[in-house]
Length: 158
Image (cartoon, rainbow, N blue to C red):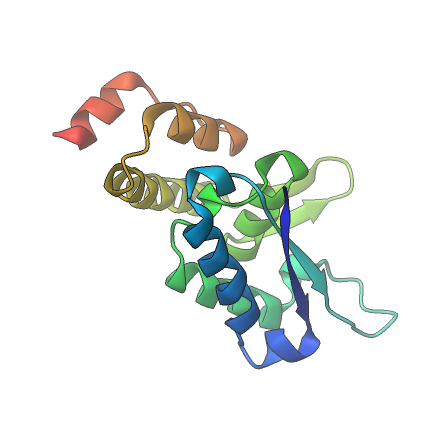
């Protein structure tokens, strides 16, 4: 069952993580494996009608996500990857541009740093939860356009 965190202008502008924390903590209590890839964020951020920006281009929203990521750096494990939540989450934290023909274009170096940072965090966190890491992290990297070799995991396991 999918869990949805609802966000609005007030929560975002106050950098209020309380509703997100309630949901995430509830998922953790239910058992982390049963919550894998079941979290979505519904952002209802009202702006001027003529504001052409995407949500990930609004500084207040990005700052809220930076705070969320600081509190729950392993959150990508819970996000619903199939519905595009991982891509949107990444867009909130990684510099990018939009192209009408090609969609989102991440800054390649920033994306690589973000990916490796998340790989190291998730690797350690998953191991602490006794959850197998390698295939999950390979899938995570593939969604963001990277391939991780088995030797990489041997290196960081040592």
